[in-house]
Length: 192
Image (cartoon, rainbow, N blue to C red; front, side):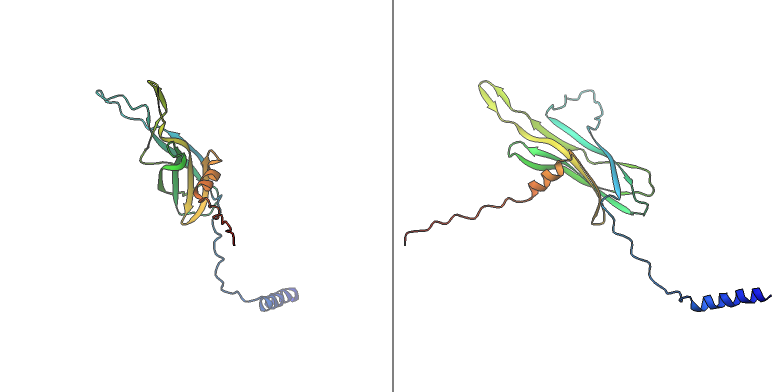
């Protein structure tokens, strides 16, 4: 009985010395990192066209392209609604500039850890005519030549995943988007 009384007294002392439970707000959720979503693969394909009996042969210089993108969630936290931004990047043959041939946004929700497959819509039409030498004249190349693609996944305004093909395309795009600085004008000193 004496032992039981000591235990009850000890518990009473512990409860009296324990700090009172404070009502605190839970810490804010960490900001999503660039690696919260993994882009497993993105395949560049030509969509199938239905065959029609009296159809003209397709233009050999015009191609339709689509991206089939497979993404998966890496983090266990719920990311909610995501925006997949895709772009097809190419070269304008006439002006020798890097350009965006086609782009678009796709909304997707990753509810579990399973991969999700989305397709870029509508197909992007790319026309490229190579240079020709005919009758003593050279016809210069014209149109756009496909260089690669980029896929970026956003949660709100935060970038949570990205992939470029080829991987050097990211640095090429950053270089192309930065305006070139012109050197300051040269001043000449006149005779005084």
